[in-house]
Image (cartoon, rainbow, N blue to C red; front, side):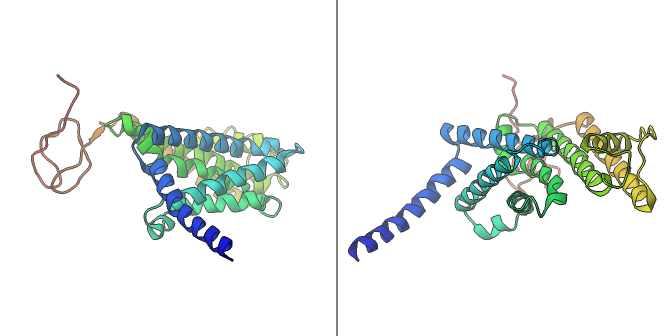
Length: 268
């Protein structure tokens, strides 16, 4: 009885220590924490690569084993982030978390949710749009150009593969021109760029509406990417009065409140 009570107390003590340790690794500024976050990001990128390559790997016998291994990795990551969160309610309300949970469900039930597996690539969008990613990768840059370009490019790539998966899941067994995932990807890219060679067209009213949607969203994402590449970049500097964080590189006063700024630069 005494031994059991002692083990229970030890477990209760270990959990707070684990939370403190994870909070330091996920949100700390120490070199060890930064290296840890880089490793997590590399693992995330490898998982996303697996999601993109999954349609070409489904026929291999070991695919389900790899699928469940990825699910375990993602589950551990979500649990670790939950323990590291300072406010669980705020963390649980983030859309990025629900994207990750949905991806996890498709990994745990691949046979039942086969037609929704293409949505796993949303993990790319959630990673690049997370504060975790930019606080780690973008911490060396003061301007916002790389962040804006990275988010716009991630949105475009995510849309390409989500649309490809949707086309493949909807028409692969009904349309003779789409015999594989590569055909669906080819159609999506030609429709998105409005090239329209015409060798593959989706049948029926639903196919036409889907094609129109791919073209409209694709053009919008291309324009967004172009804007981030050519527009003047802004620097990160928190206004001491109103808290505005983005300012023109040569700004002297805050555009929101007019207070005098003292933005540091690289000049001697």
